Length: 132
Image: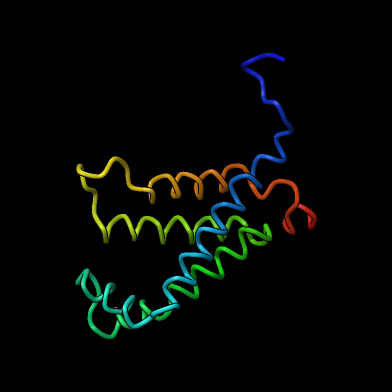
């Protein structure tokens, strides 16, 4: 075994990104749906969107997260899911801001994972991979 060579097949790499990222989005959406009124107030507290737009975003974001997470896990429309996930994560980074007090914002890591899917594609064990 060479220490500078992959230990597995390249087509399996994407599943190790898709599944955890998809599960994260599903869990995040479900937690927000658990008390959607609180999440709406959180969105309003950022004061980025007007009242009605913030309410609409607070209602739609959890469902979008669950949908994007499901698409990633299935490997269906992976490029679209990666683009939407990246856009959402970028907006979360913008809304929360960058703090030097935190060791690292997890959304940066998740954004890197979403972007990597744009370059790697869906990989093995995906609906997109089967349709090729």
